[in-house]
Image (cartoon, rainbow, N blue to C red; front, side, top):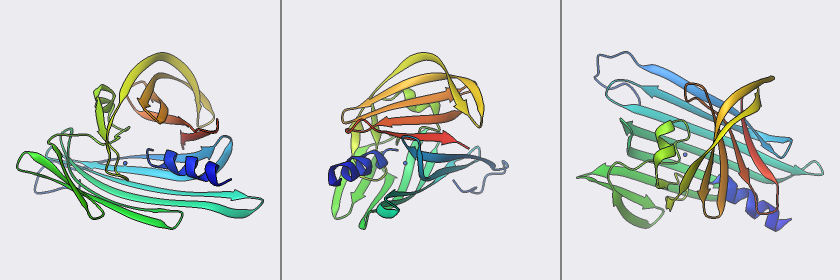
Length: 215
């Protein structure tokens, strides 16, 4: 039981711009996912993006609860705020409650570098990095991504897997499938025509799947 919860917690890790003085009108987009452990719904994950010609701001909010025999066995809450200029991450503020274990990550772009603070640890990364920004199709071309919960800057390999039909909102949708290999994390992603992210599957060590399906 403990191992299953640890595995589930690891999968939760992956799964990461208010208008400024710009005269351009703000455009809001959102992605509301129901999250399943295999076929059982365990929570939600919502991404809200506000963008202008000058910048983007992303708000991410996840809430998961796993019950065994009607008893809460595991809970997870994660919130992150990201600011982007174009496709470059410029600020990050994230907090997580992983079954009672709390952590935070703060990052800021300064002087051509991205300064990261993970609890009491500090690290400097290159400028113009990307998080696991599944909502942005440009992420699919990256070889390293920042995990907004842990602050780990992770090597990834992302490959196209062709077209595939997937159920979305009670309908079957043709989508482009990609596989993201992040070592211990193996993730499948689906994008509808136009590049809109609609689904995610993460394979767990025990053979179960954490599944995101857009509402």
